[in-house]
Image (cartoon, rainbow, N blue to C red; front, side):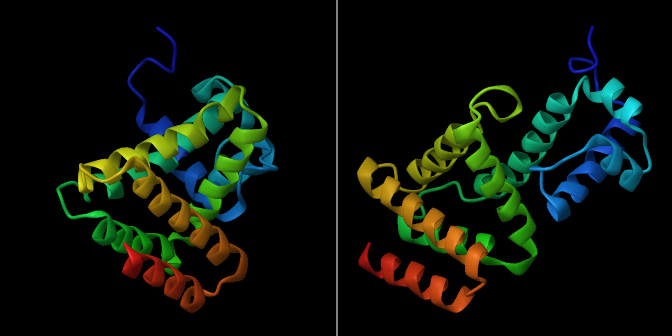
Length: 181
């Protein structure tokens, strides 16, 4: 049985959570095991043993980020309609305490498009599929193009929000779009 298929040890879980907090602050683009290990009280050798490789660690960190996202998306189930779902999604995304997660999501999304193999494989498509599935549950009869439009507006607005920090303007744009639904 490999380390990846075995039940995670308490130390592995502890280091994954510490590494997750680290990448929320520092990103994944220039992740180096030595500074990461020093920052979280470990060693590169221990990280490699526990996660198999740097790519294995990155995959686990991406899965951890998606777990936060999916936990919120799971709270939106029910037939609440696209506008209500989009409003709640925007409130969640735009909250200042989520900016590190959104930056990490943007970084991983972009990397998965330009590096479709390895640690980043499928991240962008999986998140699109997750969000569209949730939007389908919120308004099952909605035209798939409407769901895609809602997702595109939200994604564009949070890219803009992260780039500019202008929550008032981006929030107003989202609300204008929701009024048109």
